[in-house]
Length: 373
Image (cartoon, rainbow, N blue to C red; front, side, top):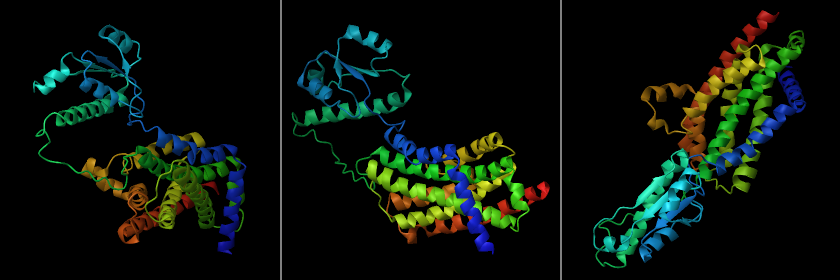
């Protein structure tokens, strides 16, 4: 009867979730609008930055530089004079103001290395930092290309041939959508299982289960498979409909292989969600504990910042986190098209971590139930 009890208790969890409109809205939002907004509005990207140009040279080279500043990185440049520049910057109309001095083309052709002034509104930090490097690269590229038309021997001594793999267009929405999907899988699996346990405690239905012929293992296993199923279905729908469909992100590897890895990850995170739920006495306490657990899992797992950039101690400690191995697995499969022969170590680690978390959570769950009887 153990299998039947786990099945029926899991179906009860699904019915309870269907009667919770707040959780349903959270699931739908997390796997749709949240992923779309994270992919299309990456904070470090430069998108339609307002720029003004003070062109005091009016030469073919200066016009060439102005024409190189086009969307989507910049808005159409506004040609102004020197008197307008400070007022527009003070009013927040321009993030960048480029001043090309008179005689600029003449000095470039004479080899005098003239200076171009770039004024930046640093209050718009994300655009200021990335935009300055973008502008420097654009200006140097246009000047170099212009000189090659006048000097036959002005070509650089080395021709760097760039070959960008896995993301040839350097499209940040590809990375943003996959990374957000990984984060939402972890977040929802923790929230749904922990909230399911606390909801039963607050409603008094957990005491009803204790007088039934079911064991703590069956109660916990039912919550794990039910919430894992909901998260898995949401992630697959989001991957196919939002990531592949709406955002047109190409998937390099096998989706069934990714789903298998996601199941192992959900086994670990849902068990962790039960453990957190046993520590919290109410939903507000559960929310505070989630902040303490979820933020390190997502930030230090390698999804936002490469693990190689972190201190070695942090890298070693985060090997105990299931999210670290899931991020590595998901990026290898979805971005680089890796097969099982490449990601099998992550599968093994996720299985071991999930089994350990399940055993620890079950022990804690039994202790918690024992105090209620």
